[in-house]
Image 1 (cartoon, helix red, strand yellow):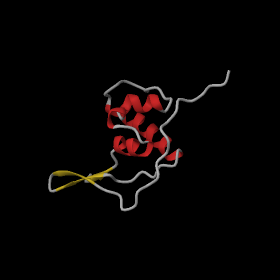
Image 2 (cartoon, helix red, strand yellow):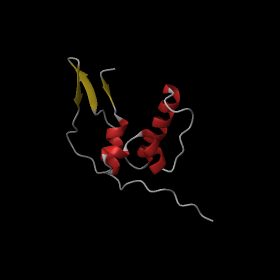
Image 3 (cartoon, one colour):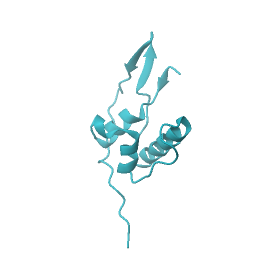
Length: 96
C-alpha cells in the first residue's frame, strides 16, 4: 500500500475542526456514535474508522487519497481542486 486515505486529515478538513479534535474517540463522539469494541484492537479500530467514513460520505464528503509513500518518505497528496466542507458535526437531537 503506497497510497491511502488518512481519515483524520479528511475528517478535519471536511468538518473544519482542528487536528486535536481528530482522535478516533472524539470523532465518534462528535458524530453521535459510541466506540464499538475494545480500544486499540486493530479490527475494532478499523470497524469504527469505517463507520466514520460512511458517515462522512453520507454528509457529502468525497474521500480521496491524501497520503502516500515515495522513496521511503511519507508525503501529503494535495487535491487539485479544493472540496467544499461541511459544518462541524452536531450531536444528534433526540425527540422525547
